[in-house]
Amino acid sequence: MHLKKFILPFALAGLLLAGLSGCQSDGSGHSSAEEAPPEEKVAVPKFERDSAYLFVERQLAFGPRVPNTEAHRKCKEWLVEKFNSYGAKVIEQDFQAEAYTGERLNATNIIAQFNPEATKRIVLAAHWDSRPFADSPINEERKDEPILGADDGGSGVAVLLEVARQLQAHPIDMGVDIVLFDAEDYGESGGERAETYALGSQYWSRNLHVSGKQRPRYGILLDMVGARGARFPREYYSMQFAPQLVRKVWTLAQNMGYGNYFVNDTGGGITDDHYFVNTIAKIPMIDIINRQPGTQTGFGEHWHTHDDDMDIIDPRTLRAVGQVVLAVVYREANGEF
Image (cartoon, rainbow, N blue to C red; front, side, top):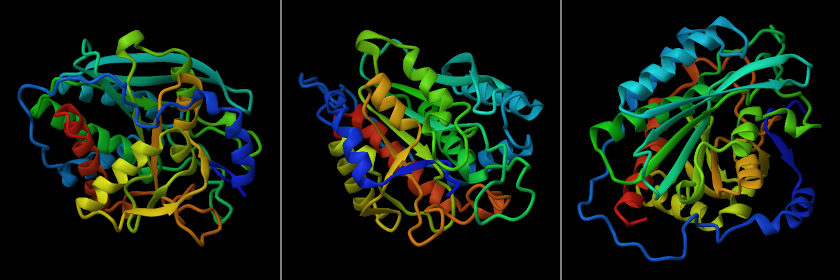
């Protein structure tokens, strides 16, 4: 199978995780010390789905965001400008990575910090690059051409841009780091070497932009969160590294009326960006990712095909994910999560 997200059978995943058990925290991302709640609570703002939808469109207007291309460079400049316009402190974490093809990739992790001096902080993440090949096993057309990646990359970025916009409009005291990982989707097809994917998150995890008390308590990764009929099961590694956080987020989503998206099924282990954040940076991070049982790939049929364009994006899915993420952020800031 040609899988972008390397899915391990449960038995193998269990053996691997047994050796990593020392890396696990209590699974919540919280410290044991009690902290006083903020003096003024801020209501959870409304996530504007049409705004997020336009953010997906704007990314696709640049073309495929493949490292070492002009579209990639121009999109980076636009993303940096957007975060700056929302009052964030923006860090461009440039790095070079060697792709499995031997090509040197000039890449940039984009980090947008809100309240950069705050010690209480969380991290929200997505990847902003797109796949350089349309190599899904069910795709027969233009397999060597890069895809637009509306859902796979674009949707998560769009949700986080709208979150940033709301953070400016409705300020909180807590620190929030929004990290857009680069070079996530330039990995080798077939799933033999999972480490050929997620090059940006591997680099960030070894070169954190914060240290000491400013390390994020926990993180949420968004990947493929905009498609019609999306379905977000409880991903296996998320449950291994941060089970309490998964339960709290899924329970919150269901109580908010989004149980048709955030389902109680357990998904397989996916070596996505969160895997390396958990195992290298030792920051508990969960993955909200669309899985579709019964398909040949385990993902939506648009995955790694040229059908991953605006036609697959549903503003209602963007709203469901974005509203849940905003609820987590603002409830955490209010001492209510």
